[in-house]
Length: 150
Image 1 (cartoon, rainbow, N blue to C red):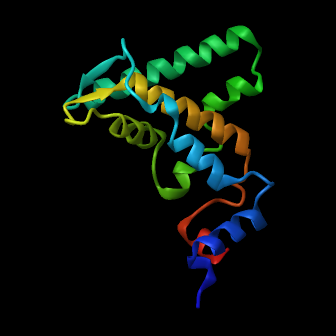
Image 2 (image 1 turned 120 degrees about the vertical axis):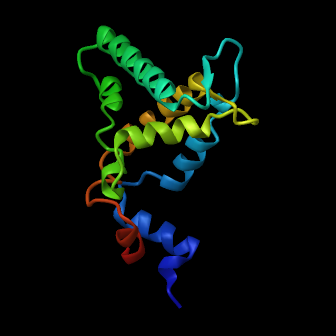
């Protein structure tokens, strides 16, 4: 009986290696983000044009980062936009891959358009969550085997 493969085993491993942050609770909050719904005035791009959607999302991130930097000099709130604790590299992915995942997640039901505004709202929630968790997910590096071995 391998307890590390059960939900309770995984939670125990996360508690053992964490700093008290309830990763499961924070994940549920992030991924059930109320801002994940379509809103009037949202920017939508054809699902056939992922490159344009990716560029638009990067521009929204840069605008948010610039706005935060104007408010405060390199505060914690601006550090979140550096995505320094995002574990994408540990899984052989690029940051663009992470952004594309958020764009795919923000496709309309018919999958004909990508709601870039919705993707950004979800990405902002993710960025805040990653910033709040500190280095819990990257030190030691998170990987499929590290979770299994925990």
